[in-house]
Length: 191
Ligand SMILES: Cc1cc2nc3c(=O)[nH]c(=O)nc-3n(C[C@H](O)[C@H](O)[C@H](O)COP(=O)(O)O)c2cc1C
Image (cartoon, rainbow, N blue to C red; front, top):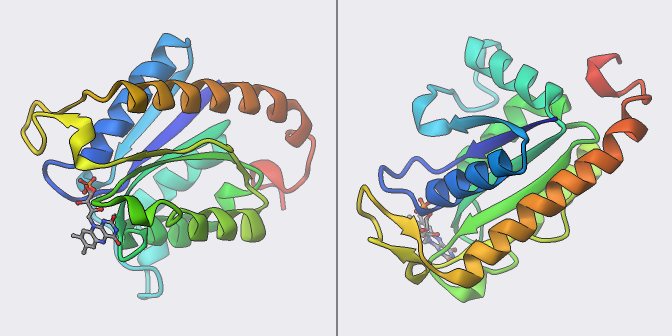
């Protein structure tokens, strides 16, 4: 099994990146192959600009998402929504998400934006029939040790527990779902 982790923040000392790296570590401990994409390292154009979908990086991401059993998306919450980078990457990679098991990790500034991930969850369910992991991680700044420093880490035990639950649940769901959806013609880009 192979799981993609997309880290969608472009902040140089990103908290959601730290969540994503912790999830990667958890998955590796569970014996799962992980493909980690730190989107700070990718030059992508906005979806809609001519040629934006034809960049090699988009092809690479599409292939990796298509081949993955699940995708974990780690996002900053901006304006009560996942940031524009996360939305853009979904717009660019489109149908590779069909029937994918998808889980979320969010870094936010306050508790009030707790449900902000639901817009993206809804659109993935409706547009691409994704199976959303019914357990997501939502962390504020005080969950991190050495916050916004290069050696930042997740220090809050409840967030670490939550990350364990997310990664374990994602693997279990992907194991259960893989044999079912592999037979569907919409998978693996067959239609
Ligand atoms: C433009 C902008 C908008 C933001 N909007 C929200 C928001 O609506 N709700 C919230 O809780 N935090 C908001 N924040 C705070 C970020 O979610 C917080 O700084 C988070 O740690 C960012 O994730 P990152 O460290 O991975 O980049 C906003 C920050 C910025 C820069």
